[in-house]
Length: 275
Ligand SMILES: NC(=O)c1ccc[n+]([C@@H]2O[C@H](COP(=O)([O-])OP(=O)(O)OC[C@H]3O[C@@H](n4cnc5c(N)ncnc54)[C@H](O)[C@@H]3O)[C@@H](O)[C@H]2O)c1
Image 1: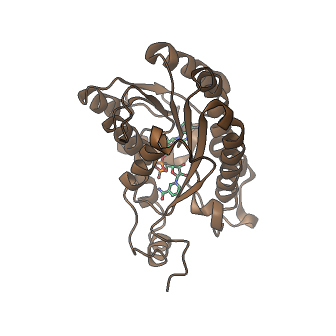
Image 2: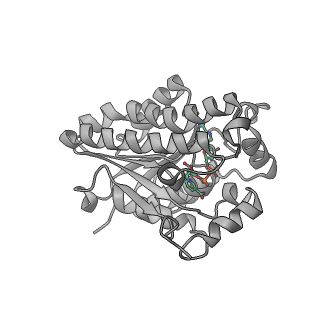
């Protein structure tokens, strides 16, 4: 049970954090994995991080980029793996990478729409319109772009799993998170619509709703805010990236074939009435 042997997965935003953990967990369960991101260790295109904002720049300058390293780790598990540069907002690049992945790996069974940006907090009065647009473009339109590009492949295979990363910010809202929350609520709507459209083709689509997970990105946030978030979590601690990855692996298996359109909280109970 719960083997992904013979399956091919593609993870977006896999340079670090949850995307990297997802890629490794899918490979351990037997899948071949294509890891995509805007950041690749060998990518020397000087200003490539500028348009992606301060988080991308600081992660790159600190060397917190493991896209190719993760692919190499997966190959050591005797699975096929590749690291490709792919900006989920660039529709042409998304189409090209999906076509290349399919050609090289033969199929694409699992899409994990993980890429997102979570690098700013601002009340509506102080929200930069540019960041509102950027967040919608990456977090929501990016997931749409990737699902749309992979859809004909999964339809032809009559088998597919699309797993979208939402957030409790999308189900509960978040103070100073108008753009992020809206994109994550949108991702849940996208998930449910694709679940309905995919059922006839054996394609399931589900959303993971993480609470707070101790990734590099989360740790780089405001420490006082982070303490308050921990205090309202039933477990009183952040989750580990593997907590998300294991839920993704399960949703990708054959055994999860009758589960579609769900919002799966992997949140340590942050949405409960904790006191
Ligand atoms: N960490 C948490 O507490 C938490 C909570 C709720 C939801 N999430 C969601 O989980 C996912 C991963 O979060 P994380 O903490 O690992 O964050 P992260 O910032 O470490 O990971 C996001 C990844 O997306 C990549 N990315 C950014 N813009 C991109 C683009 N245009 N195209 C392709 N890749 C791009 C980044 O380079 C990075 O590797 C996100 O969808 C996030 O919203 C995280």
